[in-house]
Length: 389
Ligand SMILES: Cc1cc2nc3c(=O)[nH]c(=O)nc-3n(C[C@H](O)[C@H](O)[C@H](O)COP(=O)(O)OP(=O)(O)OC[C@H]3O[C@@H](n4cnc5c(N)ncnc54)[C@H](O)[C@@H]3O)c2cc1C
Image 1 (cartoon, rainbow, N blue to C red):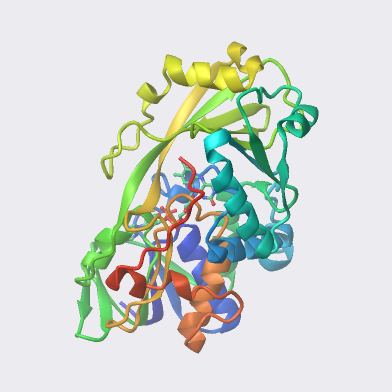
Image 2 (tube, rainbow, N blue to C red):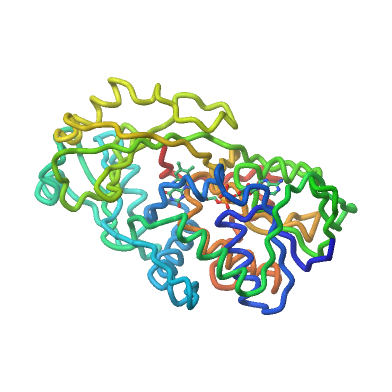
């Protein structure tokens, strides 16, 4: 096998975005993506709900979302190719978090952090919510938090494909193979071993293996607490329109948003063992869930469940936040892992930050130091208060 400057394990949206930025910032760099599933059947990037919010409580997540929304709005300029225009269908109706009285303090704390970070968010009284969304039952709601701009959803698989195509147009190679081992010294990765029998030497290695990121790190003797956490998404139809419907987060934990003429919805899983088979968990669709949806949106008492799918959150079990940057000992091993269900919106900024780190020794455009690997070693979790499902 020929050598590469950079080998990236996995070419989901994280691997593709990293390869795009590396070859955009340094044209001519020899980057090879190694991908075992070029149909992306199990990749989170194919199975995502692909929504974007500014309503986080870790400022670094807000910074990544601010970069993310600006990138999505200008995606054609970044990723367009003469024979492949970029159509992401970005819509920005906002996220609406609803709080019952005992959740109001948390929502207000989150609001202050978000305003300080420059997010365009507003707290709404039940009366204001009733006026804006007459189809919403807020009788048991004390407060709502709505993103006024910069929040909504888009076509995530199309973003993934656009990163891939642009990266390949910039000279990135994609190899259809599985990385099964790594060769390394105490301080450096020297290459990867492939299922096909070959090896690939590299100067730098990126772990962009999504839900399999923990397995790939273990090949270098590194413990990375990332596993596949199955999430089921239900596709619903509702005979009545829900004008201006945002991505709604119910106080009980479920979320729902429009998707074309349907709605999609998910909730906290009933079964939480890691790496469960990628089949929808129909036991989550029970009478209680149905009643809760119909309580919040009475029109949903007439809903139909059309179908369901399941995908993996690439869950960082340590603190549910991403790990971006180099390993402290194996200095040429880089991580872009563990986004725990909010990676699609952060891919553009995370890929840029990692590429800058690899080429210039630090992230320059977006400060992401808090997401470095060191926090795992020093047992300093970075807690996000607004985790969905
Ligand atoms: C149901 C669901 C809803 C979501 N909703 C949102 C949302 O609303 N907003 C948001 O921002 N994010 C959301 N996400 C999260 C988002 O989709 C992920 O964070 C993102 O897609 C992760 O991308 P990735 O490239 O890291 O992983 P993946 O897309 O899984 O790509 C990893 C790739 O690595 C390959 N690979 C693994 N091991 C090897 C190996 N040894 N050798 C070669 N290749 C290998 C795999 O085949 C895979 O293609 C959601 C995810 C799910 C599942």
